[in-house]
Amino acid sequence: MDREYIAAIKDKLSTQLPKKRYEHSLGVSYISSALAMRYGADIYKAELAGILHDCAKAYSNKELIILCKEAGIELLEDELKSPSILHAIYGKYLARKAYIMEDEEVLSAIRWHTTGKADMSLLDKIVYIADYIEPNRKKLEKLDSIRRLAFEDIDKALYEIVKSTIEYLDKENVYINSMSLACYNWLKEKGSGY
Ligand SMILES: [Fe+2]
Ligand SMILES: [Fe+2]
Image (spheres, rainbow, N blue to C red):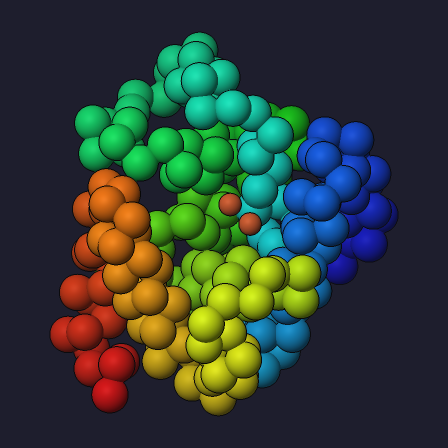
């Protein structure tokens, strides 16, 4: 366990992200650690994935498209249609390049924190949920019950978040990424909603 590495990441990140976004990242890191304790995941990796998950969030979507191109990351049409996920795609690359993060489990949790996917790992689930429930999050409907559920049944909590996110996007007429739908169907098939 290398506390110095985490301290160095925090120092750098605090200069790269707006204050509010940095505070959110600390919140996600804190809750990711707590969920890792609850479910027996690696606490150190959860802390790191939480702190780094939005490391590319300071860029605009336009900038992210250019940066992905420069990095040789090919974007699918499905990804371009949901620009809010671009920071997760480029974030994985940036975490590796700028923060020397080489752990594939941590990188995966960064990559999938916006949409989820089918067959998420425990760490993927933890960061996805922590992003939604961390203490700085604005009060959403059902947030209290989802916060409680997150520490009782991780798959049920995940299902509730994915479901309400898809319902919200649908209501707002926003394109729903195929990975979000894959995640939702995977959870439904597993029976996580019941
Ligand atoms: Fe994010
Ligand atoms: Fe976030």
